[in-house]
Length: 206
Image 1 (cartoon, rainbow, N blue to C red):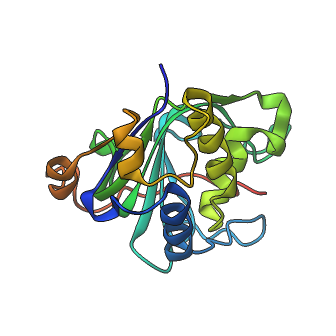
Image 2 (image 1 turned 30 degrees about the vertical axis):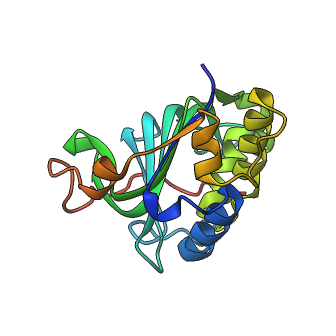
């Protein structure tokens, strides 16, 4: 299956690159680095956890921005290569207000803006922090969406060379790659909205 994108009508005229740049600036840099990790302040969490799961959710420490990554995700902690996120990355949902967690049936974004699914990206544990999955997720945590933008650009061009991250969401919809999801994105998932579960991860270092 090829990449699929859902987006709020608010961003219909934005390019993917514009949206990711704006979201990253709003999210900011968590400073989630060895020696600077403050649990509950600049950390996220796995579902079911504590260091593996089908989801990894994290929110900004300076705004309401949040992201949930989905796939088969594994975190090495102190096992070599240390502080590495690896595995498969199938989806990313970006927006604001992280809710839920491992004890609440999973993470969700209360106000979803854009969702990328069927990414089909993966990294081996042996790749360490040079792996694509680590670079994408850690990049987002650091306010840098360039690794994600590069991966999405490659996936879009694989479908149609005329498509890229410089295409607007409406242009991608016209090409059958994206679709507006205004109704679903406008309504928060009531079952998951609430107090975020306590995070359980450690330094997902660069």
